[in-house]
Every structure is written in C-alpha cells, then in structure tokens.
Length: 353
Image (tube, rainbow, N blue to C red; front, side, top):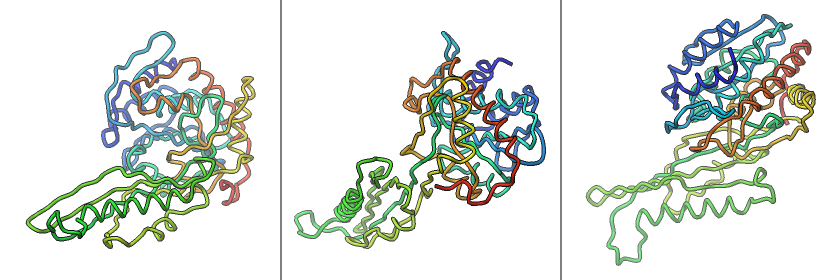
C-alpha cells in the first residue's frame, strides 16, 4: 500500500485519548497488509512485529490525538487532519520502513494509547515488553532527532477556610490560594537559565472556588516543566506550605530525560539522515513524550524521531507533506537495518544522559 494512503486511512479514524479503538483496529489492519504479525494488548495498544530474537528493536509511537475533529483529505502532496503530524505520520513511516525488515532480531511497532493524557499505554507496555533499542515516534522533522524532553509535574493545591466579611483585613481562602501560587511561580522563576530547556517553569492552568454556607474551598492547579538534573521529588519537597497549609495532590508526574547523543539509536538515525544528504539537527524539547516513561524503565539506547513540523502539533493547520513522509521512511529503513546488525546485548546504562 502507498504510505500516504495508509496515513490518510489512519488519520481518518478520529482517536482522541480514551477513544482510540477504531484507529487501533485500522493500525492492525494496515500492519497485516504490510506483512507484520499484529495484535492488540490488554490496555488497547496496537502491536506489529517482524522477525524474532535479539536485538529487540522497539518503535514506540502513539495512536491517540488531542481533541478536535479536523477535515481529513489528501491533496497537493499533503495529508491533512488531526494526528497527521502528532503522531500518525511517525507510525506510518515506521510501518512502511519495517515492512521488509529481515533481522537479525525482532522489530516491534507500537501504536500506544493515552500518550496525550497520561501515557497509560506506555506505562503498561514497559512492564510487559522488553527492548534493547528504542525509537519513540514523535515529530522531529525528517532530518532531526530529539534527544531530550523536559519533565512534567502537575499538582493541585486545595485550600479550605471559613467565610469572612469582605471588609475584613483577613485574607479570603481564594487570596491564600493565589498567594501560594505566586510564591510557587516566583520560586520557579529563580531557577531560570538562558536556555528554556534547562529552566524550571511553572504555569497556573486551573483555579476553582466553591462555597457552602460559611465553608470555603479554593483549588489551584500548577503545571511545572523540569529540566534534566531536577527531579519531581525535589520540586515536590520544595513546595511552600504557607500560606494556608494546602493539601497537595499530584495529577501528572514524568521525569525529565536526555540521552547521550552518541548512543547507537541516535547514531543510526543520524546515519539515515546523512544517507539522504541531510544535515542532522539534534533537538531538546520543552514538552514531554512517551520517552519520559520508557527510558527510565528500560534504560536502553534511545531517541525520538518522526516526520512533520512540531509547530503544527495540535493546531487547525496540522498536515504532513508526502515527500517528507517518504524521506522519513528511508531514514527509518536505514536505522532499523543498522540497529539490527548491532546484536550485542546492551548494558542497562546505555540510554542515559
């Protein structure tokens, strides 16, 4: 099947997080047409395999998208629609690139669920699958490789108090919540660096207030993005307890990751880019991906790669050029072949910074 048509078919299956079943079925159908053994695991991830044994090469893509239907069409050399860049383009490129994989070893492609919400698919996968080499499917541009993602910590701080007269000098419960939030953001601001990737940032993403009789409740949610070298435990330990002594609940927790730029997975992708005459760019991104989940669990040589412009992620203009899809297929074909030849069992420390 023509890769661009396979991508159109995947994109046509609307699959926001939590509603991926139809798209996973389509992935399995396409994988079988490309010659893979394909199935669905216990949490709904689509799996496609070729070959057997070691090294075990895993391409961890994701099939879910953010909310918001967009018109799906293929015209003028582009495939348009939600997920064409983030990240069904990467999945399609991997399907086409691995269709003639002949080993040695096993190639496993994963259409993971839930990446845009809580990475539930990847969290299940790392306890049920083994890997020796890992590529995470995320848009980097056909000639780019992503070697780092910031971590994320999202917490909700809840404040409780009693109603006071608005003319009173005593702060309201909402005042306490807003003052706490300002203290948190000021502390994060003190850790700013010249590079955004190496800076701790904090944003207020939600404020909720409620009153029942004289009882007041205010809850504020803050999202932190952490640079490598700073753990979520350290940020939690540094959260202020004043004012208001809030109860803090963790909603999202993912550690930052950065891989060695000389590791075998990065170098295999770089070799594929250079084989097409490209000049590889190594990216460090302020967002998160399933690399934040898989790398700490597997600790193998890893990187993230896929076609498409990241600036189009989650936007109404999301689309992927067919020419870029084809170049990414060629890059991944080279990378899979090089990784297959690297049959030495990796040391467990091989994927870190």
